[in-house]
Image (cartoon, rainbow over all chains, first blue to last red; front, side, top):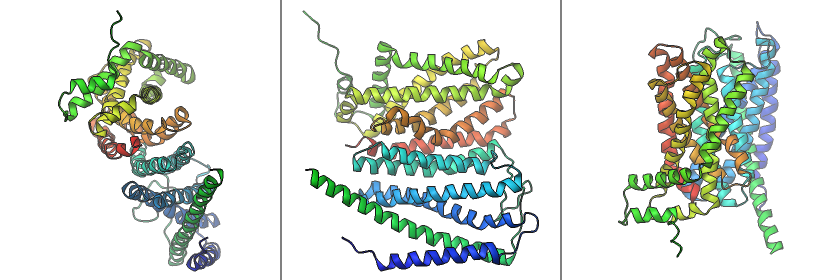
Length: 234
Length: 244
């Protein structure tokens, strides 16, 4: 049995501390937004989870390509771990957005381009798990999973573009980069807000890496168990 | 004396291509020809797709109460939804036939590149979709008194069908090898083709409502880009789908 790496334990501890600090920064340190009030504080975690989830999906597509090239099952474990953690993070993003949207837009959900493409992206990766569940053969599962993460990773930005053209006006705020006249709930960040925001990004990236690592280890253990089971039954 | 049974489809491919290195296009068209002649003997796929499409339109008629005013804005939506649903039916069937009757193994044994199988199957799926379209469009035109038989609209439908059958063939080749296959195909396919459907819908809607070209050029470009991107991806990964 492999021993748990000390670096992973340290990363666990760091993640918990980072999450605590980030929560403090978001809830107490950052000033209250003038128009929206306290509900704007959701923003820090909303972006933190969204950022890491999208990176995770891209990472999973990369792992898929690497698996197809190397045929090393370790990359399949990396891929499934990345998709799983990212899917949960993205679900959190959507839910946090909903919580913010109710007071800001007066509705939990609207068919805005960003919201719609987020929902479709989430569905792509939900389908990924259904695909994996339907295949018993380990290598075939890995191959098909890899292919699907690649297709999904390419299709997600295309979906976003197509919906943007279909409904050119968006009410989703764009805080970073472009200014957006039609957005409802736009605000500009003060330096304190920026600190909390950047810290949340860092914190969620580290939490993501920690969860990913743990999940990959779990997947390896699972395949070890499967092999042992095979040995016993034979 | 009983006559010899007709040769097995994969063998026909080998016979018709006497050299050891058949040209790519020739092999692709051999697969297309095999599918079409098999279909015209059984007619099980096309008839199912057609009847299903008509039923979908019928259901839409009652669900959306397609009166004259609503029809104008919704025709493209009804058409594309119908094609998407009927398309999954065809994709499922065409891949399941290959798998269940062991024809896929025969195709894999043929001395051709694997991508030939992909393009062959894609072309035959595309052909069936287009045949259904050619029949559905006039029927819809007559039923709802709109003229859908326009060259530009046909072009858009062709572009949309190409992308749809490219992704569809790739995904159907995967789902046919899983336990829950016919259930899984739409679940995997629809979130991927949704961008294609939205772009196609946007262009068709623009055409039917007499929009300027500048309004539809962006989704039209996306439609073409989608076709190119997914055909190339399918071409690259199809080897891994049929690998044993």
